[in-house]
Image (tube, rainbow, N blue to C red; front, side, top):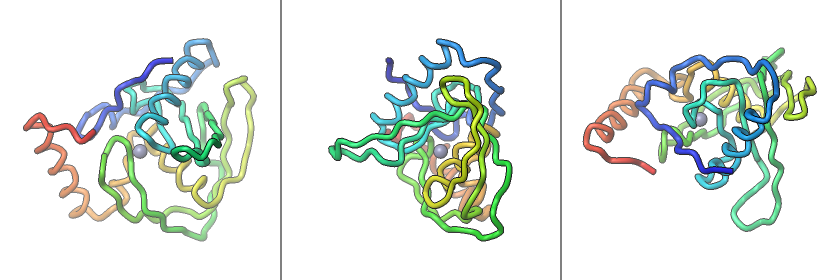
Length: 175
Ligand code: ZN
């Protein structure tokens, strides 16, 4: 396993549309391992491959592990897609490892049904609600070059982008 650098706003790669994974190879499993290590190190609960500059449709997630609680539930989602979403909406305060130290309320469908391939190459369907629903939608957005700030008002989004552009210009890194 290797720690990968997580790219941050305004890095243009965050706007790329990631490519589907054709086959679950050793390389993909190794990338997932690296992503878990980088995600735990950050620390964060979800990571899309593009956040470590790999434009492939792979997501890692662990909604259980917290500093020192001894629990963990690492999950990987390959080529995940939302096949249905509830009309009912939910608001969660979201953050993103690629937009450090910025948090905002985002409204999304409260429940979604997803289809994905796991690391053993099995195609699965699963219902997600609560934090899982929010997190998987946030990460699937990344695969489509969409960031959570895109769900905010234009004014809020511009303020955040400007802040990070300024920081990049002055060589400041929010990590
Ligand atoms: Zn994110």
